Image 1 (cartoon, rainbow, N blue to C red):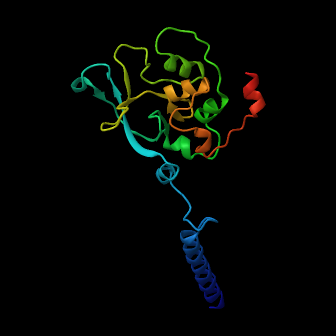
Image 2 (tube, rainbow, N blue to C red):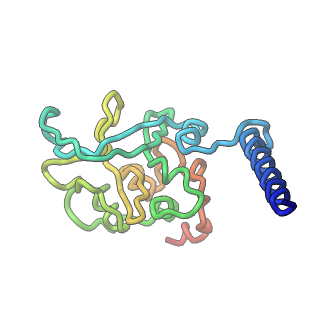
Image 3 (cartoon, rainbow, N blue to C red):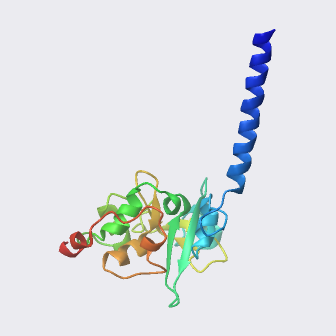
Length: 201
């Protein structure tokens, strides 16, 4: 009987502790008093971005009625600068607090080797070990599509860890040109490279 009461008492304490912990977690705030940003969509908008839900689509160089919508979708955050330039990064890449290949590629600012014929952004993506899924070099074309946006068909560089950034933004950044926003100010994973290393490349 005592054992049963003791077990019931321990269970009651654990349940009460769990309830209090859950309540504290729900009401936790940052040091500024604002609720913490706990999702990638919220983080995107809190850093000045615009949410996009894009669908992989093949054949975007042809007539819209002939475009082939593929399975799946990908959330992106679009940043737009005052000059109208834009850069897109997948929500998972933006929100990651550990290194991703896309973030490291952006930070590294590796120079384009100039090799290949065709779309330089696609070639640069390949040089870095990524894949421009629709090969921006093929005649049919393709990209990540969302209608009612400026960049309806987005060309994106996807790395083996599935981290993703738009190919043109990555390409321009390799030449020191910032499009949309400097992602080093919004990516949760900070730039690991010393500035001297970048200057020596």
